[in-house]
Amino acid sequence: MQSMQEYIEEAEKALLHTYNRYQIVLDKGQGVHLYDLEGKQYLDFCAGIAVFALGYHNERYNDALKAQIDKLIHTSNYYYNAPAIEAAKKLKKVSGMDRVFFTNSGAEAVEGAIKAARKYAYLKDGSYDHEIIAMEHSFHGRTFGALSVTGNPKYREAFQPMIGNIRFARMNDFDSVLEQVRDKTCAIIFETVQGEGGIYPAEESFMKQVKALCEEKDILLILDEIQCGMGRTGEMFAWQRYGVKPDIMTTAKALGCGVPVGAFLMTEKVSESSLVSGDHGTTYGGNPLAATAINIVLDLFEENHIIDNVKEVGDYLGKKLDELAGRYDCIVGRRGVGLMQGLVFDRPVGGIITRALSKGLILINAGTDIIRFVPPLVITKEDVDEMAAILESCLEE
Image (cartoon, rainbow, N blue to C red):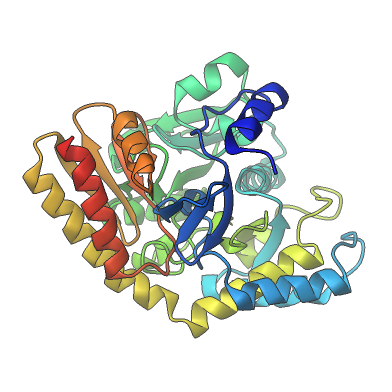
């Protein structure tokens, strides 16, 4: 077997250099821990960037996928398949939405949401110049449509021109949204809790004001729940905390807990006046294997009371992070909801994250000065205590 360093050297020769990877090769996982090729254990507070909600090596999850692999992995969307039908029914139930389109990823879900919104507007007046309002500091993905509504210029500038007719407002600043509204505004899109942009939850008043505006002017509200959804905030989807239902919603990441799958969902009103046969498609989206992952994930969320655990342990995590912020002047704030939290520092956090990794703790950033905490949703208070002790030892250094 090759050494970890040999694998890393081969990767540097073969893979496109679009990531500055940490110098470990992960090999396996168990529960809330990962192990590298040399057998070193890491407490995981990243969960594959909010993906592995159920932890690693969940036997029920693994067995369901193995059984489906032996039965049927893929078939075209020209045909029905039972796992996708079951997954759509379950996803409708937990979301309260009416129609589902399965995708391969979150970015692809955002692409579909944008297309649906523009088609909805086109059918109203037959014109092609409709506009979408997005938020500054947002992140929706790397494909062209998703990148066009991502509110961070550094991600967009080398790839201009974007799709066009996008205006940016400020999260939780309703007046800034009003300033961008035009007769041709067809949709407003934002993350219910901004992730990459710094762990900024939407305020209830902002959500309700934007929703009322959308209803008044027949503008579609698109909520991106790719990172903050699937139980991470203590509700199945973060918008459910406010009772502000979107017209279109995107989801991915923990939806498949490791199997690449996403979805965009919409109300019946939007589905009746937007995408029709031939308007949109996908080769892999909703295939039997991906849909099986969704089914077992939603089953295990219910059986294992995952959301109850998020509420309890999320509160505890928030308190522990507040305690750290109170003891160290370099920490200037904490924000977040449930098991989606951020510690804000007065300096870049890369060195702290690297030190934590050397001590067996996996963390990630959200911007240069924020440590993001998005662990598996099955973590315990004891895991939080261990994380806090390791992080504090890094801060002491």
